[in-house]
Length: 222
Image (cartoon, rainbow, N blue to C red; front, side, top):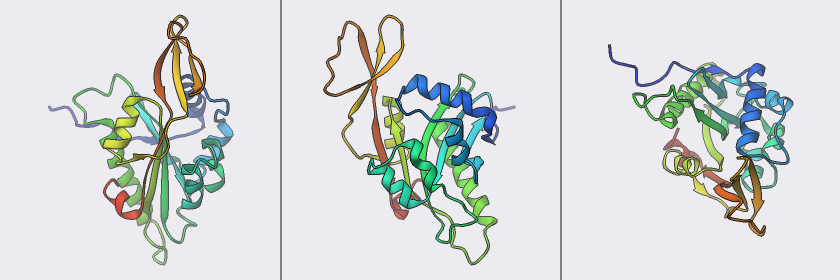
């Protein structure tokens, strides 16, 4: 029997996933303002299904947002932890305008080459998720449609995925850069003006805020 082209469908994120997700994120991007379980609880209070957990295979976490909060984020007026003030609720949104922030995507070695590219699978699952939400909305409410999507890409792989699969463009020149210590392996964030010893540190990435905006542009993705 041929192997399926994708892993099983994801389950919604729950509180039991929060600590591992935060730990992994801090190791990859050790910000001074890390997320907390309380923040994640608010992100997924209405729609935990946007935190897609492919058990054993990886995860992909989108934050569902109202456009006004998303606009503040892509203008760099607020940080990821501040997104709690504008979480999308399909039951309450009359316009149906939805913005998504791709917070984290990661696959394990079990996501084999026999499977489709993870980003493609994720997009299929988001489309199905939005279709299910639309099917359950009362008829007077407008259909849910994605009008913006963003990501904070720290690695070259994340940058290329955001650009090539999600059709995002770079919004600002990077101001923060990721370096790994050559001896103990820990990751640190440096500013452009910092003086860094090449014998002590090796550059592994840079924080690039990317986005695709507008109903028409997003319709080509979602």
